[in-house]
Image (cartoon, rainbow, N blue to C red; front, side):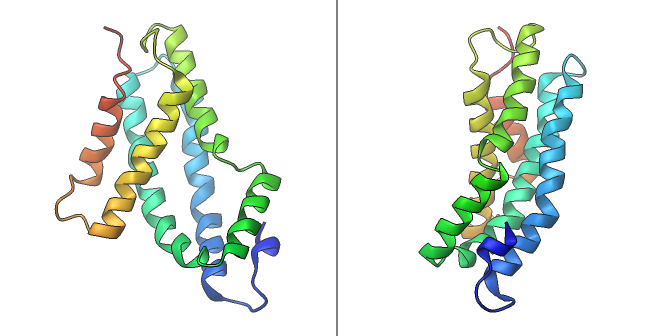
Length: 161
């Protein structure tokens, strides 16, 4: 992926972003995939809270590096192609979450009318948004990252009635 995105010169914003992504993405994806082993254990909220907390941290780390890297439309197009070729599109994040939620739903621990795919997208979006707010506006007026993670999970309203 890095080769397809590198600018003609070494260094720069694209290289920094790729290095950061290479460092942070494996941990983020492993936490998402580890949810598979959590179905039926603890509570759904307790299982999702560390996922949301880690998601906020992940997006805070990578968003600030992504902005300058994507200043060039050419880099953006190459990044999209590289992500697709590497099989790391948005489903790389949401699929393990949705799979976990579907497993919990089959166990009766998530509302029957909940949509696991949509809920997974909403959790990731909430993490992304919280990170964006901190990056752009600072965290003076925002709840802590931990409180934000709890809010994101709570407001998915996945618990059965």
